Length: 142
Image (cartoon, rainbow, N blue to C red; front, side):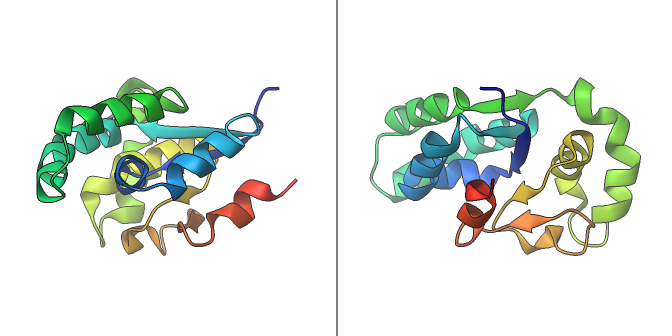
């Protein structure tokens, strides 16, 4: 089955997938009906932060990076060349909050998809957002 509904994941959701249980369970449960996406920079950010978080949690960083690699099998990584045409309008939408988040907004604009995040900087950007405590409502809609 080809997923017609999409959801863009922020880096913090990737990290929750590595260090928690619920995100991974949701990705696995809905991978056949929802297209999960994230811009390449989110995957890079997650890789950058995993060793430090793993250390603070007394976990093996290589195991955590391997968990991210497993998540990457479910999530479509969107290359900058695909979303860069949306940079200017994405920056305009997010500049007053955190301009560094423009790739997530641009990817959501490219795909016409909501964002799964815990970051309140996306609120007011004109892009629908879902937080982890409510995202299953979106995922389970027919």
